[in-house]
Image (cartoon, rainbow, N blue to C red; front, top):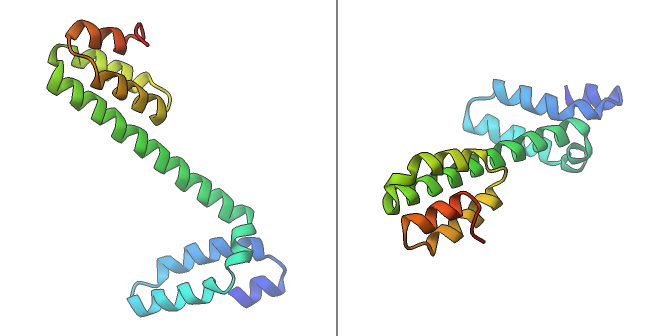
Length: 127
């Protein structure tokens, strides 16, 4: 398959060939062989639009999961320190756009001593 794609000058399809081949090879030794075979073409693969698309999707999924993890940390922190504010924390955490913004929110919550302070932080009234 690899040789056929190279001969046809369709190297942009190599990442797809790799992904489909990975579905076939289940044994460790087969997987190692496949990895080694495609490792030789790493530069070609990395330049491919298909590879770039797969990487972008992976990065997006990772960022989304990271955001969800930070959301849960914010909610858990509020749950432990300001239990009456959990509904507000959930609302604000899910509406916050990025994990960086959530981390900044959490940093501000770390210094809150009262429910009033925490509520102001959650509502963005306190910098």
